[in-house]
Length: 280
Image (cartoon, rainbow, N blue to C red; front, top):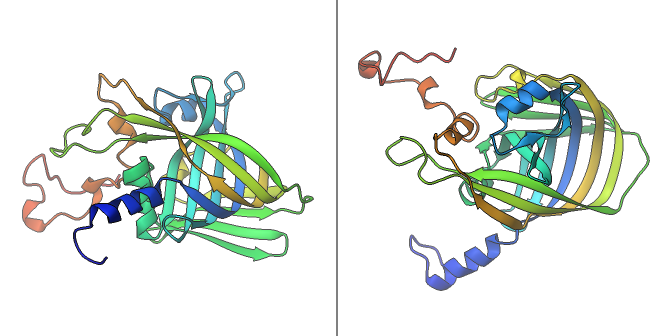
């Protein structure tokens, strides 16, 4: 029923509707290697990179995906992830997760603890060749150009895991509202189509989504596929944070740096709280 207050029955219907996270997806992706040093720098302390520490390489993945969900309609996304491990569980940690439109951004960030920000992922096809981009605030922050001409390998099913840390700024803007909560997703990919090929990955300069800071040592392979995905919550673990450092992994990823936005003239340089904006 339209209105500002839902009945308990309506709320329960919404909760039941949101609980099973399910999608159909069409995805263009590129696996690449970044440096072990960079991966250690950007991963929260509960994670370890997946790769070859001796060789100084860590595994990563960039993708542009079109989604049709069972909970918030259709949307598109452009994502960059570092593959990592929590204990004996292998999964991935998203550095950038740019999604459009608004509802999947809000649900992903507030319900699941993802780092979604509003932007666009776009895909253009020409035979076996595909160009895919991630765009936000008028900047194309990543571009994939792939030629996927390998044989059809689907259908098949893969089980995987994803990591998100659910955390929110405190209402007084000091630290986090509550201890960070690690969400571990038990993911099932039912690939209906999957092909591999070659590709390139390029970053553009954006202070808002700084993919340009991610070293690309090599591009391993490109993929083009379609799948049905299921993302049930497997575990939620409260993380120890005695030094209040997890907030470092929130600002900039899930929320733009507010100090880079314009300030009313009367407040500019007034005191240390409102210096003249400088985005570096």
